[in-house]
Amino acid sequence: MRHPMRAALLLLLILPLTLTLSSCTLKATLDTTSDGLTNFLSSTTPGAWFTSEGLVKDQHKVTAFTTLNFQNLKEDMARGQGEYLTSLGTLIGVPADYQAEFSALAQAKYPYLVSSDRTTPGEMLATLSRELSASPILNKLSVRN
Image (cartoon, rainbow, N blue to C red; front, side, top):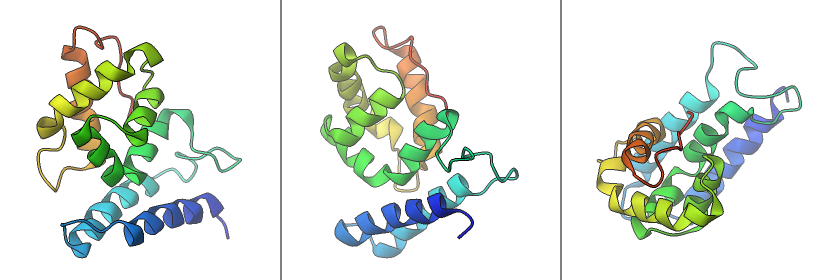
């Protein structure tokens, strides 16, 4: 197979879908997930997302993580805690001392970050970046997506 990393990413995406079906319909979940995955995997430059070793390039890690874990991330953000939210914070450079503030901001701003069931991972990251900029504590962080 020419792109083994892409196949592995697809498997990582499909497995959680089969294990966690919530109140949203399967079709809506698959549409939202496949839209994000299509945006993540499609590129005009074949090697744009991946290194020659098949790893996601540093500048795309936040987008890749968010796209592949969007449903779990939204659940963590709504609760204001969880491993996916902590991982996102780590990826965008939130120091360990400020993870609680980051989680609280994500929970407080959740209605803006995920304004509808059609919000894409990219839209959520753009809104998160704006919210971080407005935060008196977290304003030095920026989301690169």
